Image (cartoon, rainbow, N blue to C red; front, side, top):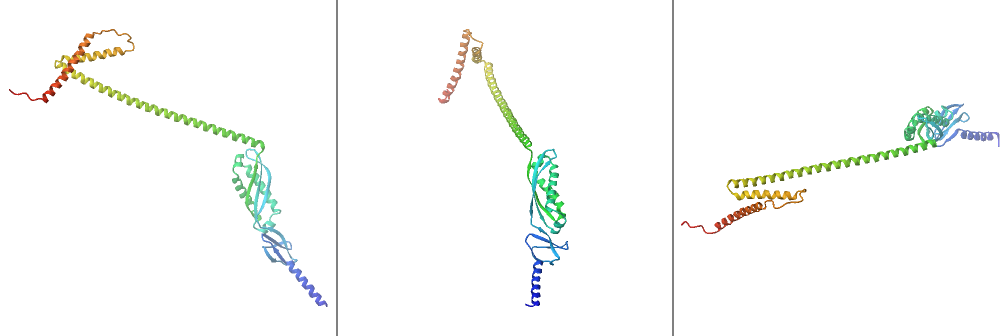
Length: 320
């Protein structure tokens, strides 16, 4: 083998080494920055790329996928001076590889410290009750503040979530007692409302029953007055009939009227609660005479009726 052959073989090997040195394979989800003599020149995307061997070099290998960063526990003093312990998680993604590589040193450490500082700021501006009940508001405020702060670094914060908020043990016990007292208070209020409603309904029912009873008494009084009016009208009619009979000279009508009132007076004396002994006779002959007069009146009434019937049923008397 002569010198020319050796030279050609050496050149071939050198060419192969140069090609291998200039070919770079970038995996999916990563971006590589290219530096020439220490200065950034361009960014390699996923796939096969060529660089100038021995002049260009790979500067930073940046992960472009979304990443998770755990925020450790830290103590936070709330607005009402309660001390709580909180931790969280941050989701971020590099969207500009050169900015993330050259605008900030130790990117993850910077994002972590920025998130922890803003957690203390946001949670420290709220009362304990608001802190425990408004996690969505806390997450939203943290995301807005931190995302705005890291945007010059070529980073996008997609989510910040507070995982745990742990008050001290004595504060948890106090909150438990407070919750128990609130529930007992609500139960007492509900019982009082129920008793008040029951009393109102009972009073309304009593009022309605009294109104109905009064209406019943009014209706009964109206009926009694009407009955007394009818009785008075009947009594007046009877007195009128007797007066007409007396005016016509019928003595038996007078006896009937006197005997009727006399008997009613005796009935009232007998029914009197203070009357224990009734001495008889009380002009019994007059009473018997009056009863006899009543009988004569009845005979005349029934006799005239029978005579009229016979007259209507028999032959008419002859004229001669």
